[in-house]
Image 1 (cartoon, rainbow, N blue to C red):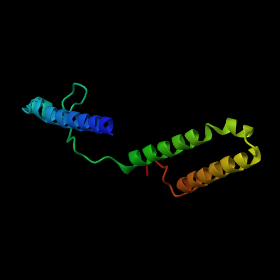
Image 2 (cartoon, rainbow, N blue to C red):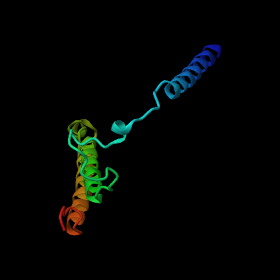
Image 3 (tube, rainbow, N blue to C red):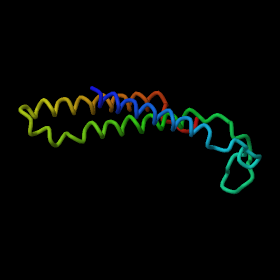
Length: 116
């Protein structure tokens, strides 16, 4: 029990010390160049605080959704070694059908149209 207490105490002390050093160590003197938006060496053309279009977020969410689908279907080849590989095939087909129906719905609602 005392070894666990020592490890927890060392972890807490280390976290507190690192947090305090991270607040004290950086130089807090920003100048005009550091506060200006970086545009690959060119002078900034507009404000850097303009909101992004929601289309970018939609594409990112769709990418994550279908990337997750691939991650869920990757172990599928090992599913034929189970006691009932037909059940694995049905579940995988169900996942693909649900995702395909969602993609068709998104497409029919115009969510994938980039320009209006």
